Amino acid sequence: VLTDTLLMLKTLGSEIINGEKAPENSLLYMASVQNNYGHSCGGFLVSEDFVVTAAHCDEGNPRRIVLGTHDLSKPADTVKDVIMKCIHPYYIGVGNGNDIMLLKLSSEVQPSKSIQIIKLPSSEIKLKENERCLVAGWGLTKIGGPLVHQLRVVDVSVISPEVCRENWPGLPDGLICAGGYGTNKGFCQGDSGGPLICNGTAVGVVSFNKWGRCDYPDAPNVYVDIAKHLDWINEILKKKHC
Image: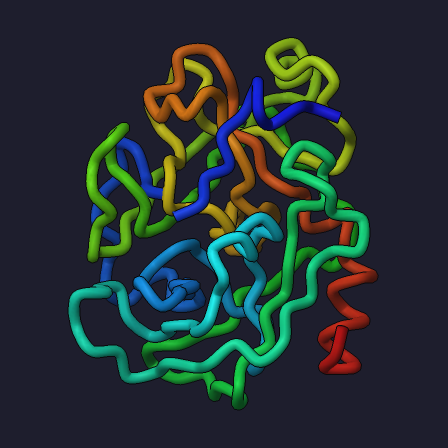
């Protein structure tokens, strides 16, 4: 297992590097996971009453979920309290591949013109090297910069597991690498828990990058592979309980 104290930065509270403002009618499943001080992590709506985010976002003490807006500086129409946190039972740290959590909303959300549910993989998927995907968030746009109010999005390329392990020795199974690695595109602090979206499907969860460097000199960005956790996720969505 990788040691986060030496190798990685959990992207708690994080933002999108070299991205652009997300169009208003896009990414309607995006959720702002907030504590008493405001935005702390990203997330995404996967059912009427559950949002997926990163397990390490629990450190930010999530209290509420904001849905249906790209601009966090404006009053939100849909704000739900978090009434249950389902942290993956094998989560011990960001480097072990189980950095995923489901948050139950205080009441169901009905899909509308401003809120939609994103689909998850139906089974294991094989991402192709250099496949273009998207990552979005309200995190930092540069190292040491402020969080942003407007949702931003950037396209990133999938990196092969072999190349990823060359740059992340000891990387366990159950993770996806995309962005970073000298591309100057990817996530930063504040984007944690947001989705990696390939062909309209949420395939990954933003987990960590290297050294807190958001200009990505040498290491790929790392995401939890959602397909590895489908049984666990679907059981919770079915029972509506951890």
